[in-house]
Image 1 (cartoon, rainbow, N blue to C red):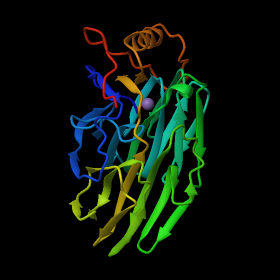
Image 2: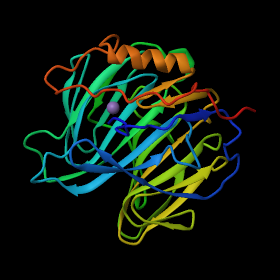
Image 3: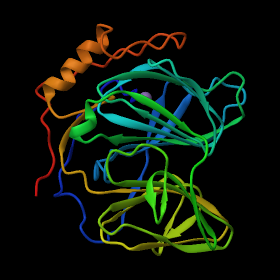
Image 4: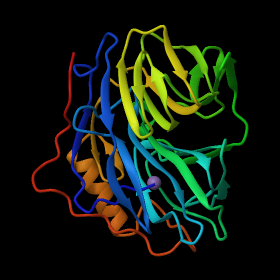
Length: 320
Ligand code: MN
């Protein structure tokens, strides 16, 4: 997934001052964003109130949408820097191709995990032909400094651990939940899990109290810690929870995201996560001149970078 906004805002994020140290409820509605082709996404992170949940720095929720007679997802080659992308589908298929030569179709229940390190390019398309329904999330994880300029990589995990307790079945997409650890390579302490609630299902999901957490309702209706939520809504929960009460009258799919508060101050612009204006400007120049990020053969014409906003990008955020 690419940020296709032609005037992407600069996001300053990181540090600890905005992290809620204790349990809170902050509701966020997704902001509709067009995606190349004919689909739209609901962007939950970054938003005006909150930029990060742990190292999770970007959350797009798309569908469920009937693309049976349409091209569906059409995201041309574009670069990434300083982050991991996490592809997670509930319905449909996404064809991933990248500048390392990976050429893979990701299906529901499978983790597509791309580590950009110092630079990678990829493209994401609905395959031809494709299933009628498309429904999923695209997530980014900011990489911490010791590894952020490391090697690029792609992982495709078809089998993920499950923690089942009563009416809640949690698939661990990234990081750890209780004793279950995803095979996806996490670079900071975090969790990403798909909570599947059966009809009249309820349970307590174990949480790491040092993490901040949020939930995104992907389908169905659910009550989380006493708060009723509908699809497309995100509830930020703060830190300091040992568990989370969830219940659903008719069944639901809920994305749980959490992680240790991300202490570094970060500059996020377009598809890049860096630390300084110069780093982002260099990355933009090198993408435009065809350097560093490589090419994605056969995936169409690469996306041009939007212009940088006037003035220096300053790493922002919060200090303790
Ligand atoms: Mn992307």
